[in-house]
Image (cartoon, rainbow, N blue to C red; front, side):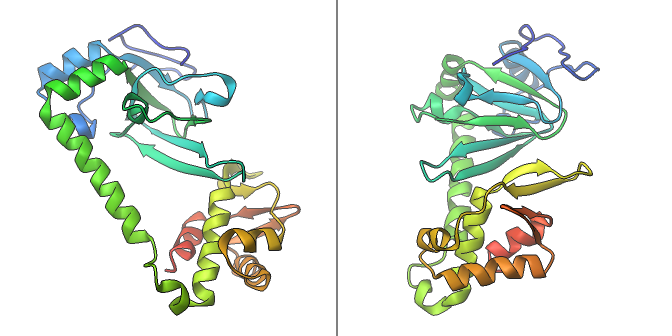
Length: 253
């Protein structure tokens, strides 16, 4: 990672202002005492961020060098899901962290991290994070609870195995929308407003094959997005202008 300040010092970056490093708002560290948090903060490398600043881009040779705590602001992670060109996006708000999976031996590939807002992050080395987990049972428990909640949320959002035949075309439409959401990338329109954009929309038959539905379902699903104003065609792509409504459609709400 680049443009990091010296350990435990106030930091500035491409935007003006200074920050006092404090880990008090990090969720998995909430059980630590103020003194323990202060000592841990001294061991971190602090970095302030500007909106849309690239924090990490493994495609360009950057490497994760520890666990990154999001102290202020929000960070968007983009992960490649394979050769099909799909990308999964995850937003880490203030109080969260990322990079710990690499510490556990689960390697990240083609990960990109971008600041969604002006903010502040702190990086704790892998060895120090592992030492923290082994020494502080409360931190290990908080991390396990975090993973359990994420797993439960994913299970709750997944349709039951026998729902395909029951839901019929509606489920097919939801699968189309979820695939489009996976393909979309966060961008800004001409007025500077955040939106989601697919630069090149796949052919209907390709989308249909990916989500196990028909070309007719794909065509109707996309046409409904445009008709309802949730998205707009920008050939050869598609721009989602109402992200909240689109995500609701993905879940059938």
